[in-house]
Image (spheres, each protein chain N blue to C red):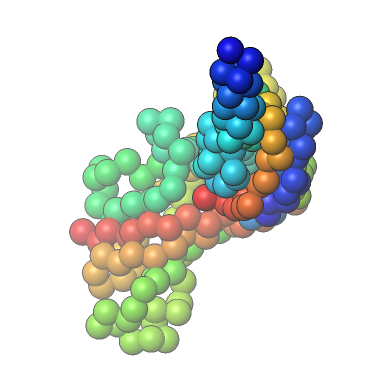
Length: 177
Length: 66
């Protein structure tokens, strides 16, 4: 949302107010621009940017430290690294359940089956240290079984005991080998 | 001679009237809000201050996201 003073006399100051809704921003960087159009001789159009970083209640990162936006797990033992790092300030974080739900069309599978979540086995390693900012990193190691007939795209749901983040969702793929 | 000077002054006056124009000046085109903890803010508000450093009225016709 953007508000602005429409008339600014010579030598005077005006305001352009930018509002960003953060309710659905769970983590990562944000960068929102506003384009201002005026009768100014020097710059009839100019671009303003409001940016920042949201530090998540539970951050999801890949083993290489990159922010996790997609999770690809494999049923093949010793295949791709079936790991996800969870960073939070909660001391006794627990993961209750991990499930995968097929998304985007039946693709040969009956609809009822596509609606059924596949439960993923996992183990969680507790953090061995607390970082300077008070956060800790837990390592989640997945061991999916071949419940599905073939590899599918979908969404993983990670249920936690965190009062402010009971559910983490991440798009991804379950690779059946 | 007087007539010549008057013509020049008139021309200068006319041209300055034609050249009178609004100018937009802004200190920070980009504002970095830094790190915000998730759930601590529902909304982020920032006010960009723009100054009209020209010599006629600045009219902002539109300001929209994007």
